Length: 267
Image 1 (cartoon, rainbow, N blue to C red):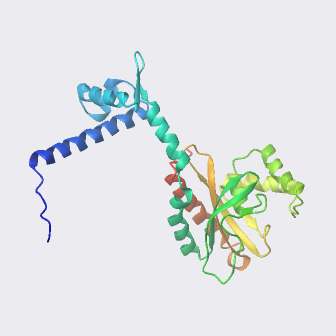
Image 2 (cartoon, rainbow, N blue to C red):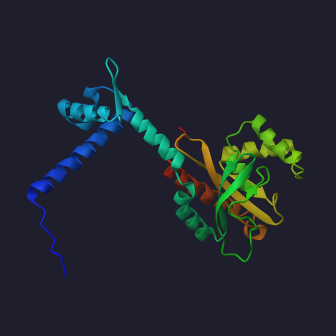
Image 3 (tube, helix red, strand yellow):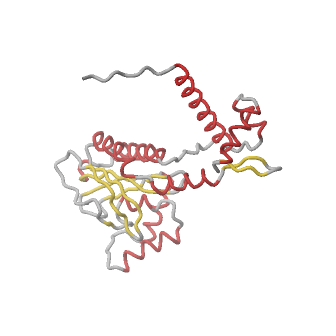
């Protein structure tokens, strides 16, 4: 027997609509205060609301600790809002947020795509999308890889100063690693990669395998993770590398925006 749907009364509909409007206005107040407006009159002017309405909304937000109020100063972001922001940052699931972007990049390039983070003195693979080409990239999810020789590893280090870069380079020597590129040349290349925003692996980590990588940044602007595109050198020749660098950087920026990053345009 099909159940009958009870009609929604008009007064109930009006109540829900009013409640939604109040919620949205409250969120508007929170956003305006977060942007730096701390005076009641300023907030009312930005939102085109009367001061009594803004005062009522702000008072409710202060009561719930989403805003704070200091006499003589005005309103500010409250501890509850800061706590929620911190929790959101620490609980962000980067592989989940990045997955769709990684799949699109792999489909567009036909090459293997990786996602990784800095794990001590190594790069930790969090995800991998296999390419369509008849070549097997030996990396695995959960595997820890060197930093100085892999594109992914280098991309994770693009914000490091020279002293810290030398530490990473020497660490590989200390555990018996062999590398054809001198420390001086590696530092020079890392400076160039930092200026370009992308890092390259030109058959340094694995014979006949090339890679281009770019960092993922969070709301602070710091590097949170990195992505890379890898394939056989025959599919990643010098002519194709600029295209791959552009697409990898574009994808990394899209993922970064998912984490709250905003690009600062140079004048």
